[in-house]
Image (tube, rainbow, N blue to C red; front, side, top):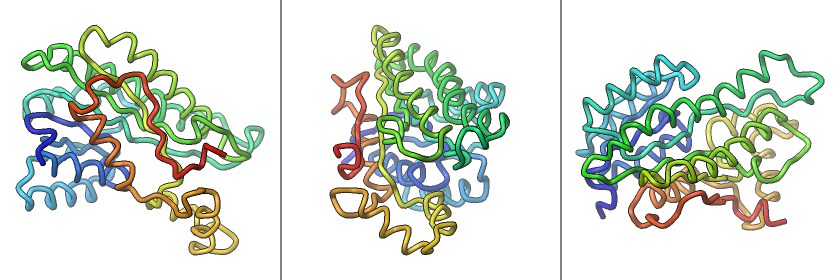
Length: 259
């Protein structure tokens, strides 16, 4: 199916994990995809893979916490790919896993800059292209929050704080931009087996496999999520199938937050 034909999608943090899976599915559904990340080699490799399938894709280096870069990259995307219809704010970091009293200000601020300021800046610079609305279509902004933005736990304070902020930013922006035909929704994933989560397992006392089994027990559905599980939700929110959906929180967590 070509559910996203004629749409241009920007994916931040698109070189790995959920971002990479989203880029693949968006391209499969006909979108022209701007893969952005700071992992240049991985981003270029993904674009080469997509081009081999006949997709239209291009890579840009982007630090989402740098406004000058965001503005310049989004201008280039619009010039080279023909506008911006979909923004997937996926770039981010969990941050340091220590109690707040043991965090440095720099550690706290870096997570807030990536997870909150990055969403703010990318949304700020995408909205004018969507408002301009090639053929008056408006746009869709999809913010990757987390189950950690819905329920708390005894871990990673900057992650919970920043992802909670993203959830409410989403609702505010949905109200602010609805009249422009721009929909804004958030996605709240449970534990997804990405390189970042696997790296967390390397520090687990029972090793990577022990960590995976531990995570499986936390999800009532009985398994850890895969990046594609979240990517399918992103494609839905990017498509016109969700044209009456804005300000919503799509939870894809295997039942984690239902407990």
